[in-house]
Length: 256
Image (cartoon, rainbow, N blue to C red):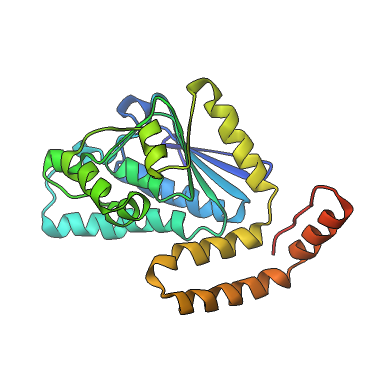
């Protein structure tokens, strides 16, 4: 992955660190491509953790890398580089945790919101900064944000482009939790360790059901649940989970 993305693998945890701290991990072409490759490689792990080096999570698009693009050029970059990057998160068969250690702005904020679980340090902020430079939210922001916080708050965050604190984001339901900075690393580690020991097959099915829920009427969603639950119910992990419950011990899940 080179120096732009660091990958550490331990105990089924695939930890990806954006590594351009001098520009708060702004996304240039090489970083986007390396990140997508690192995310895809993490699909074979048990959990992925995405974070940033230095004092920022990700400041969004590197504007020095976007000069001279015309309309077709913008579309090509988004479709060719941003879409695969976001899909590498949303289509991952394992849980993806965004460990937001600092500023998450523009596409960086939406990179975090694409993840299944967002844990932020209290000092972190989320900024839909796009209108500051005459753009609209991208990297999935127009989908993720209103689904998480409702239309009015999504509109306010996008139109005003004002920082949303980690505590505010937690209270809105934008993220899972905001934790004190001095506990941030330990909380992320504990969450990742718990998920890595969990039933990965059930997690994959859960993600599939949850992520499609907004597009499905109830009857269709019930049918999807039944199909996916059938696969989970036939799995060794279900048998292990029941056995562990009856034997009053911790389960030892293997995944599908």
